[in-house]
Length: 247
Ligand SMILES: C[S@@+](CC[C@H](N)C(=O)[O-])C[C@H]1O[C@@H](n2cnc3c(N)ncnc32)[C@H](O)[C@@H]1O
Image (cartoon, rainbow, N blue to C red; front, top):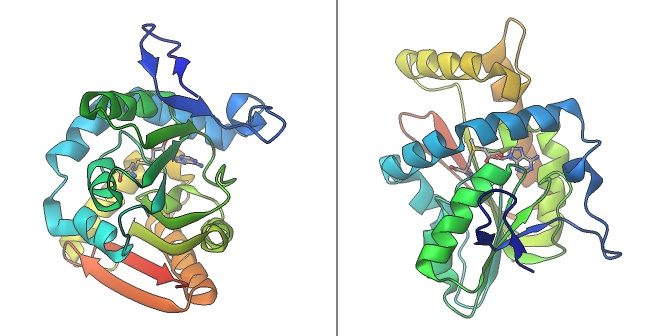
């Protein structure tokens, strides 16, 4: 159900997460933990810049195209993107499922979702919906594919979240940074994590170790809960694409 945007009065195809009784997900509506509030505030503040940056780099390393291919979707399928941000992956996802399929983008940041909603409106897609919700508590019961790019490192327990995604979907594809590339790439990653330490909850003296642990946890969840596994490295080994399938 579309609702009026709180800001600017623009009508946007974004729904808030609700349980079957119609109550809005309390983690998103209020009473949310400080961590989620920080993530939302951080990404709200950077939504415009992030959108620009992500669109400018959409083809770099072929990462995003490889993720969508790894889902092995067909026309008519339903795909959910958790932490969809401004919607940079939505065009490729919409392309593969076609007009008869369904694409659902989930994010906690209303500003990011505003950006994604603008894209949906400009393209005139009627089968792409956006939900403001916590990806750690999926607002979707079943899907043919689940995608999450550069999101799982933000979860305190990526293993538990990715396991949940494996239960609801036939295919799960996760892209994440890995600090196992060359020294220059590691230095860049270290700077990135230091700058975004509050979002990653990656303070302390080993932010890269924290990042590596979270990437590894997501990988292990796919190892343990899917039967068909595929992994690839992109961009000098700094980005891992992990795909798991149960079909
Ligand atoms: C680094 S951005 C990645 C955006 C997009 N996936 C991409 O590849 O460009 C991380 C996104 O995940 C969202 N996010 C972080 N934690 C989340 C959660 N628990 N539930 C839903 N979205 C979340 C943020 O709001 C942000 O839009």
